[in-house]
Length: 470
Image (cartoon, rainbow, N blue to C red):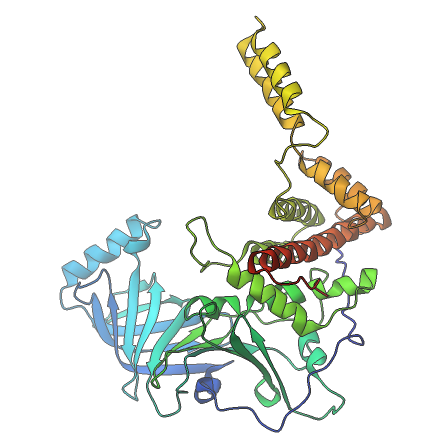
């Protein structure tokens, strides 16, 4: 029996629509829109499989890359190895070392227009029973360099997402002119001009950002899509990417993407307004999330190429909704605790515990002649009790009306039960739905709290006046 799902529809009546404009500026990706959805194929008169850098091709011939939908790419290469013994040795090495990333192969090709493509990493299957070897396999994405006259001259990043017109994101973009097919929104984020445009005939959402000190090439192509996954609770990834380097040169990437559902999901941050009546519009929230993601740095002070931690949490929750209700509870409870850690209170000293009292008790336990293992456990317990825990921080947020008692009670009960192996009902019940929805509310509230604290820290560092988000 299928597991019932809880879905929160997104209302759209509170959002400010975008104002349609007559036309958008020319974009590099306009030339590549025919590859957006498929089915399609690219024919390669020359196609070759290569191992490590500077190695000779393992197999060289001709073939094609096909994609029936958004989910992936598949290639066929027909050719002969110049050195069959070398080729077989390379294929055997890869099979014996499946966890060695450098044992994988790379595919390259030149298409019928003479355009050179990098076709990515692959682990192909070989059929050597014919005069020509036949290799087939899957690809994660393909790329090329565009130096045609259609490339824009400005240094920028362009993304194209395949979004159906009935999706809540597009509904929020529609203005009072219901038959308008061109909707454009332009804003500034961290000194970059960000343009958002929906092309209804192609079902393509375009986001373009000029490069700046904060939004630079490479990182920006990942950052621009992250807020959409958080806001709409779906795995929204770009299908086409253009890394415009200026001088009419651009790297073009065709990537795997998920087909998004027209309906909203309960993981969507924008669904938060349905629960507590928070009134905020789409693009200001998008800008806040993008600024948070772009300003984040790793432990070495470098910008993050991988997804921001908040984005990763929402991605895990989105994928967890395809699992059981127990998986929902586990993922939500853990994600809430992860967001609490991002508020930087957990581990701080408690105001109601004096350091002198803590040290006196630790010294007293240390002088005991009891079992050493028990002494260490007691000392660790004293040290933990003198610092703010997740439970302590949640109680503070309840006391300051950031969270409610209902939300705290639901988290405390489910967190302590599911983390220790207690199952929840596989079917929808009023009591457990109540708790799961309370956990999702907590996740949304804490996400907004992280945004508020990040804005506060940035305002303090820059010496500007803080304007509270929302």
